[in-house]
Length: 98
Image 1 (cartoon, one colour):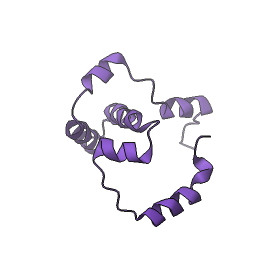
Image 2 (cartoon, one colour):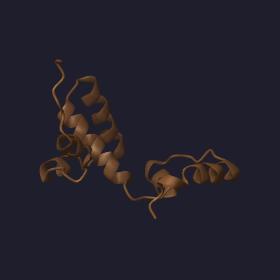
Image 3 (cartoon, one colour):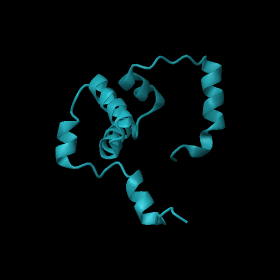
Image 4 (cartoon, one colour):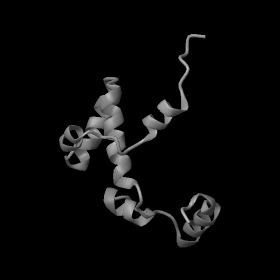
């Protein structure tokens, strides 16, 4: 086996979005277009640390927001009909914070 054993603690640390250093947070205070270009560049150039911190920044922009607030933040058009949106909400009701 060549794969290293990844402990649960390491996996959980990688999934956290609140561990961005203050320098990184200041560096990433850019407009959305620049942030997304940084994500694309980090992915293309295989710069894992930059990819992680930029994706965590976007995750923090989404965290705790309603679907409509996320649409507003990222200028995403809602193309669901009201009936379709209600159906999706019902199907995914189990994952909502209560």
